[in-house]
Amino acid sequence: MSLNERQNQILNWVQQEDALLVEEMVARFNVSSQTIRKDINQLAERHLVRRTHGGIAPVSSTENLPFDHRQFLNSDAKQAIAAKVAQMIPSGASVFLGIGTTVEYVAKALVSHHDLQVFTNNLTVASILGNYPHIRVRVLAGKLRHQHHDLVGEETLYGLRQYYFDYGVLGCGGMDEEQGILDFDPEEAAVSRVLVEQSRYSLLVADQHKWGRKAMARVQPFSSIDWFFSDALTESQTQLLTSHGVHIKLCS
Image (tube, rainbow, N blue to C red):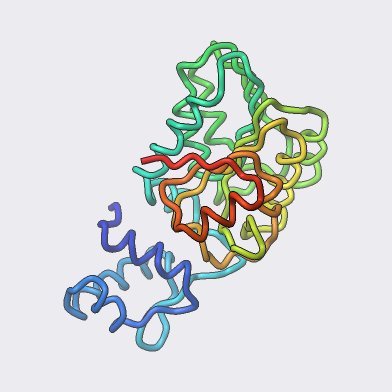
């Protein structure tokens, strides 16, 4: 059973806060406390949030939500972002598609391209593009993270360093105005860090809800990114990214 729109919003909101109270959610969504408690029960039963006295909190700042739960969260924004990325990447390019569900949407948007050389440690990406023989796919070796459907570790980093890609597409667990790009797992962050270093053009793909999320592992400063694709930005976020020399593509 998929989440309803209010539950999606609650899940995005709580990942940007240390905790949320039932009263705060009642006021924001203008529904009864019984309705909010039903939402909380459904989210907690799926291990998407942690119950606290009077409300909820994120499950962890060291672990992202499971892939299967993230896959359809903010799907409209991810699809719009992916379409813009696909417009930038020409046929015949070499591309590394990194970790994350937004990157999965990019893979789907690239299936009409020809003569692409796609490298990835994202097993869902490999599965999608494996149905299109006109796209060459190479999967790097590494340690399988079952919950996230990807490969990480020293073998993955070694494989990355053997190439220099035209485009590197990366997602992230969170973004912080001071710390830059963040992820939940240090091994995941290490893959994205090297991906940026090994790409002529690095493309960060992240919807607006990644700002302020409590991910703990630093990836790169914003100044290391060439292009940022998102569905929305505040004025201060736009000024921040522009001051770091990042090109912005808003997608809606």
